[in-house]
Image 1: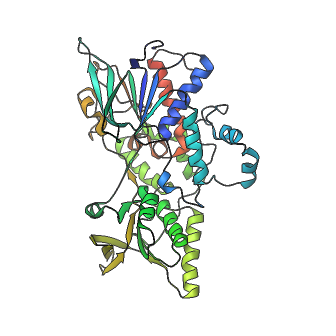
Image 2: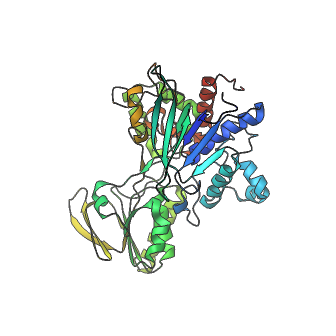
Image 3: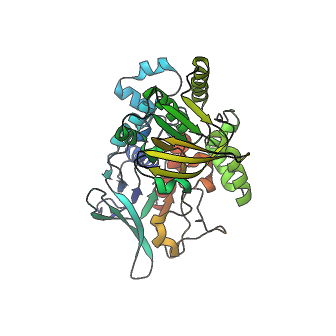
Length: 434
C-alpha cells in the first residue's frame, strides 16, 4: 500500500453518489480502526453529492428502512450511519417519535452529510470520460489513468490508480419516441424541479410512466397547479403497488445476492424478472391511496382534473411552439387519440449500461461471458487477463449478475461496499478485521 506517494493512488472512485460514499465509508472506518491511510481519490461530475436533487418533493419519503444506510449493516458503530447523523443534527429523539420512513428531504440531507464526513480528497465537477490502462515497459498493466473533464470550462484532468471503482450509477432512460422532442417542454423526471421552475404556470401536463416517481409527480402537480389538467399515461390497467410481501422482499438481503450470483444465466434472468415487482414500475401504498383519493374527489365534485389514461401507448410526439402533441393508441383495441399539453414529464426510469463506456480502452484486458458482458467476481471486480494487475470494480453496475439488491437500492449499499472493500484490501495485502 502506498503511504507516502500519492502519485499513484491505491483507489480511484469514479462517481461520488451513494455507492461511492458507501465505499469511502468502508475505507475510512477501516483506517480509523487500524491506523494508516489508504490513498483514495473520489471524482464526481456534479457540483456536490446531492441524492436525486431534482426529485426532492414535499411529502415524499424513501422506500427502505433507515438503518439500511451507508454503514450500519456493515458496522453499527460507524460514524457514517444514519443514527450518527441524527445524533449530530440533534434530531434523534424527535425522529423516533415519527415512525415510518424518513422524508426524501431528510434522506437527501443525510447523503450530503455523509459525503461531508469523508476525509479523503473529493473532486467535484469531474465527469469521468475514460479509464485507460498504463502499460509498463514489460507489457504489464499495473495501474490505470482516469481521465475526467470539468463541465464548467472543459478542462481535462488525469489521476492514476492501482484500483478503480466505477460508481457512476444508472443512466436516465428515455424511450425512442420521446427523444427527438426532448427539450424545455419534454424532459426526463430526473430534471423535474428546474424544468418546472423554468416553465412557470402550467394548464396541461402529461406524465408518462407508472412507477413511484410518476405517481409522486402526479400528486405534486395536482397540489402545485390546482387548476391544471394532469394527464397520467400508463401502458397497463393502472398504477400497481409494489410487491410488499415480507418473504419476497428478502431479495434485498446479502444472502440472496450469494444465491443469485451462483445461478446460471437463464435462471438469473428469470429470478430477476420475478424480483422486479418489488422495486420497479409500481408505487407504495401511500401513493396508490393518494392517487385514488384524488381521482375519487374528482368524481365526487364533477370537476375532472386528473385524467388517468390506462392501457395507453404513445406513438408519436411533436412540439409546436408552446404545445406538445401526443398521438396515443389503446394497447388492446388500437383506438387512436390525441393529448395536448404544455409539458410532458417522462418517468421511464433508469437503465444499466451493458458495458460501461468509460472502460472501452480496457476491453483487450477484460474477460467476457457468452452474452458479451464482463465476467465479474462476487466482489464486483471485473475479471482481467494475466498481464493486467489493475482491480476494476463495477460498483452498482451489475444488477444482471448480482441481482436487484445490488444496484440502485440502498438496502445493500453498505454490504456491497464491504464486499468490495474487503477484496480491495486483500489485493493490497492488508488484513481486514472480521
